[in-house]
Length: 150
Image 1 (cartoon, rainbow, N blue to C red):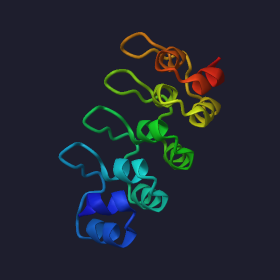
Image 2: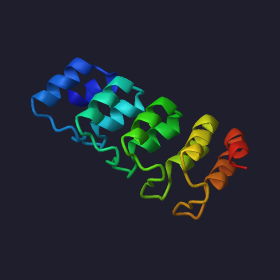
Image 3: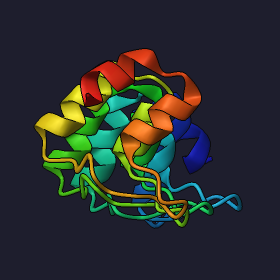
Image 4: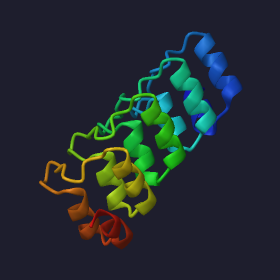
């Protein structure tokens, strides 16, 4: 119920669930936190509510990715701003060592790449394979991201 509410941005249901005792950092069996779901599905009001209620912007999913990585993959700058304002680490990396910048670069989210760089993301971080964001972008044929990273 709470996970669906977070995904849909149903604030009334989400708030009722939290008030009834659902932990703000609860996760689905797949490892997605309420914050991850709200962020990934571009539900800004739900993200704000969850952060105000103490949701952890560093909580990872089953793949070791943070909500910031999820929104970087989708290019959701407005949500990224909320997460970073709440203390999300700009260079948090997954189990594979991929940062939000690496995710944005891989999926050719040039505006997100630029935003992350402006907010201090490291273009020199190497993932577990030894690749920098520009290397990832080149490998994926993400020309717009390469242009920003060059």
